[in-house]
Image 1 (tube, rainbow, N blue to C red):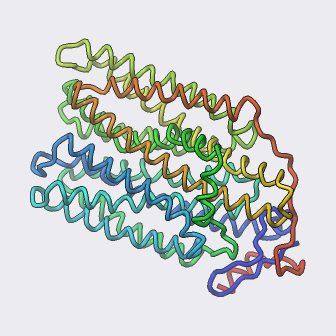
Image 2: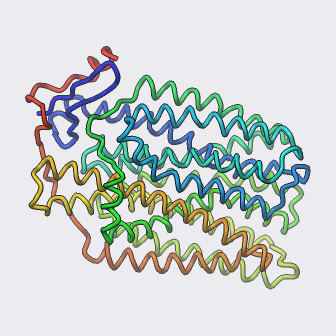
Length: 483
């Protein structure tokens, strides 16, 4: 049995989640505690990342920001958050999962305070200011990669689908959470967007303190820039990243754009208060997508990530077809007027895309550790410990790469919608592009990951981590008293 040595600096040595005895004797509780606070930090990070998806509803003409510029602002936040996922993946190994969770929460106080400043002073700050601050909110998008890499190291292979899905899903709920708070503020005090920012300043302080008290660093977090370079040599890296554009890219892209699409649609349909009408509905899709994510991981644990992801893309094709049909009908009306049937179809189509992409997010992330665990087990040049370390290194690297590329898919969604509205005064062209991409992604998933699904037996390494002496794992209660 592995020995988990705990220090007063929240540092664990000898962590081997595949050791079933150690896992049952206290390892599961340690992992659960770290997962809980990882979810909290990532959740609030997602909220800050998507803060401008709510702020655009408050931006009256007094702010001097056009519809075209609003799409660019949200695309900027999405782009920076996606790019930061690469260095954030490395940060956990370099600085420790607990240490980086604290920093990544506290640093978000800066963009949140700046958003508060901008929203309290309509017309006093130009478009450039909004772009810079939107870029800083992108720091919240990086939290996903460091959090997922950290939790990947805490859990055994047999539970990774559920754990990673729960971690990601709990983080994703940060999007509908901030949108719900925005709805309440619009309803109760429509001219006070700074209230939303003030709430999150308090939440960030709470997350940072909680991470400092309850989270831990592991001694063999294994992500590195070298691992990322090595990971790029594998075909699976590029294929899984493509799939993640269609799953997470859809989720985060629609999360940023859905409020604006709804506001435009309600305005075209003649609603008296399109901002409030949009806010009442916009949160539903991201919430369902977030809740569905861990179940996508759980289904993948049981039936295989490739099979579940293929089914999801098939359903996303059908959902996109609803949008295409409704958009085409609306385009046939005078001045592209949107009538009630098309408005309902837009809402149903988008919510279905959110829900299904949430399931697919979880199932794609099951494919990642499965692929590299399979490669590790078949690598005769590695001993037992070497296989564990290599699998974790490559899985962690691909989590960062796929997360970044998937996030860029969200940027593409915002830019495609912006271009469609600008050139055609409707989103129908964008809907056709989304549908075509889902067809391609579905075919790729079926061909490479569903036809011959990788099935790992339930073997465990039960290896001794270097320096262990088979002493009993430190019980959770004792660990806490030593902190």
